[in-house]
Image 1 (cartoon, helix red, strand yellow):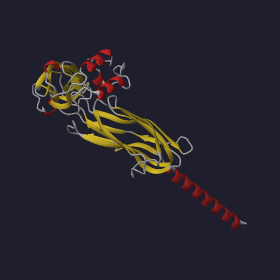
Image 2 (cartoon, one colour):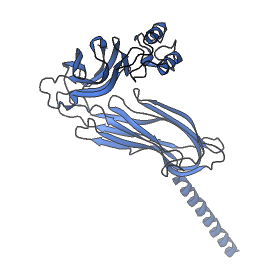
Image 3 (tube, rainbow, N blue to C red):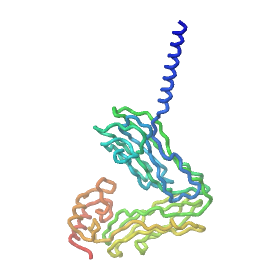
Image 4 (cartoon, one colour):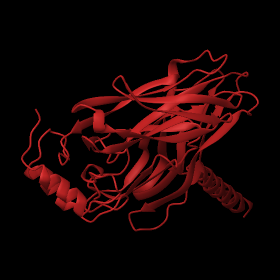
Length: 353
């Protein structure tokens, strides 16, 4: 009897040990959505330095779809580009099996947000394992200097949903990324960050607006001049005052009445401030604008059927509406309307030279 009891107890202990072992093994398998690497640190001036992070799904089982929203601090980081790694059939380091269907792709580089949602579709098999959802490259826009504090900024997975092949939620943990920009010593430093012509083609005699972004990367409030030029011809000079760490978007208006027809590159120059040593970023040449015949909205230096088709295709639309083409707003009124059509038709058939 004692022998039978002993065998029974040993059997129960082995069974319990096996169950505990299985539970421990299962507990170790946790699905993650994470940013990799999770931490990037810059002790020296990282202004204009580029880096790439990946958003990864790790230890997935029966994964059939995802919806991931990601954001970053646009004060310190500028979006450069990204690459989607779906499906795994095309990208060996990616996720989801083909065929796949794209549900959402939403990038707002100004606000610093990106959303990507994808799902496999029949007859695709579920995805098991670890893979990259997308890679994203940034440039350090601003590295703080005293008296500003060290910048600790998140690369945040603020909304993540994973679904299995039955449409059920897959439980998972999130691991955000972070960028640390250790504060630099005091300095004077201003910069031109970007040039954005509101349109790339303008009829001779009409005006075009240019947006130029400038930033104070230094430690002190600064007052300085910004000069916008087309080729070597000055368009306009503006004076701006910025406190440390702040930027401004300046609008310059170029009246092309006295500008010859042709292609122009736009330049912006911020006059160095007192004691500024890093002046390489004070000068930027970017953006091409064609001055041409009024009504030549495609910039090929003639006014023909293609220009008319383009303009009438967005007739009645205003800036900000889907389908609006800025080049078709010949009179720069913010709307493609009767006056733009009359300008085009009055020059129809003209060529330059």
